[in-house]
Image 1 (tube, helix red, strand yellow):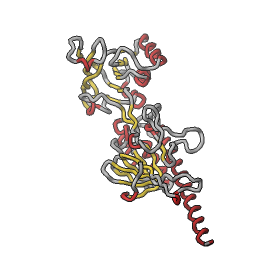
Image 2 (cartoon, rainbow, N blue to C red):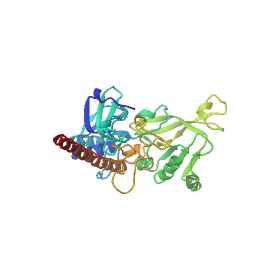
Image 3 (cartoon, helix red, strand yellow):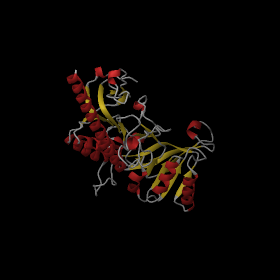
Length: 369
């Protein structure tokens, strides 16, 4: 894609896409480095943490803190150091391919800056560097009760919220590795974990299936195959009270609602955890040349030295759940955001050195003429 910088509202050294823990951590460090970061909040301002009523595992808060409060504190901290935070959703990032001979670097390669960042509202910005911290959205079922109870007995993160439901009946929805891992983890707290899967066979690796089956034999997990949750019941004051289930001996019961063999029932539980995957928010990076894995997560260089958060496109960096499909914790996202800001600062400093050297060369040539 080719961007048109002429229509830009504003140019910034650094734009951060996403305002979750990774994006705000990057903004704090970038602000302290005088890189004037502009943060676009995205379609989930504050990220998934805003759906968590209590955060007990983020370092520095011995009594815990609410997700929204933590995000708000980080916003204020970033703004204190000069970051600007705007409501906006990045729709695309264009790499400006300058093909004229005068625009080529000394090595003969074509420069790929500035980036043109287009928002869904039509606004256009340019930037010398971009940090993609747009996260990954947890998949949901889209059933009644979901919106009202998310964060009030319904969760998408067992390690974040499991400890709030000690001695409760806990239901996990899913059939892959994540569901097995979360069900296994939640046995630390639950009176019983109920693993609900819409088919007979699981998609998880044998390793995780074997671990869950051990817990089944010990009476800590019960498996509910060929079953789906169709409604969540409860209130924000009392949390989840019970769920409505449908089952069919051949699986996928919601697709067979009118079948006489499909059975509907209510089931009492104190919490429900979705483990049906995440969708990384990387669509806006299509066409830039960054590499994505098979699931759409952003690939970064990694390693043990500097530039770990760099992508295959110079000047684009990645941090948080948009990169990390494994840990997906607030603390790890924050650490990656810090790395991205430091890597971006190194990149921007190198740009300044190149521009200064180029300007000096032009002056010297002019004088010699």
